[in-house]
Image 1 (tube, rainbow, N blue to C red):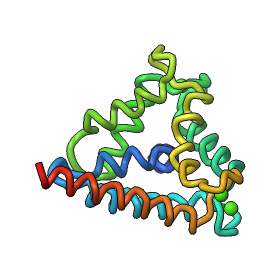
Image 2 (tube, rainbow, N blue to C red; image 1 turned 30 degrees about the horizontal axis):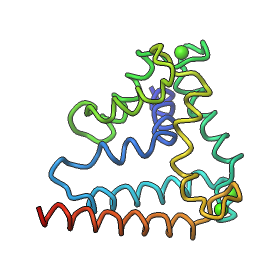
Image 3 (tube, rainbow, N blue to C red; image 1 turned 180 degrees about the horizontal axis):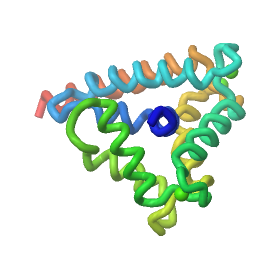
Image 4 (cartoon, helix red, strand yellow; image 1 turned 120 degrees about the horizontal axis):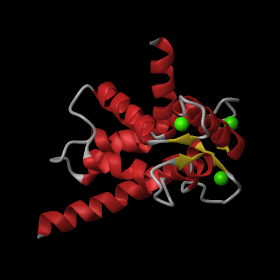
Length: 170
Ligand SMILES: [Ca+2]
Ligand SMILES: [Ca+2]
Ligand SMILES: [Ca+2]
């Protein structure tokens, strides 16, 4: 049981942005959702930065993705199938302590399955799990510093403010 929980948690690490978006209620504004996402990203960042040098590099991201994949692939056949994906979703839902996985949540895992064969390969998983952070790599040096993450979040925040203002004006 402990092992299962650890596996699900590892999957949660790799799929953090999913959890953050799924945790937000429907009535939240974009800013509310973003705030939750920002907190999640910051926690994620600290976990990913294994050598504690204040930056998350590609190696650290790939290592985290690999660990998460290995744990999610419980039958060790090299792909995350529907049942294993469901286990991730159920665990995320359980962790949030509310209703079963929402549709958007499901869609994101489904989106990782690039060739739509119902199975997520290691490559597909790596491609879907890590890049959320790389978007923050503004100087494109292959690693994301905390400052870059903060900048990225404030850019998203400004965008969300505009979107909320637009929505309020309608
Ligand atoms: Ca690091
Ligand atoms: Ca499998
Ligand atoms: Ca950088």
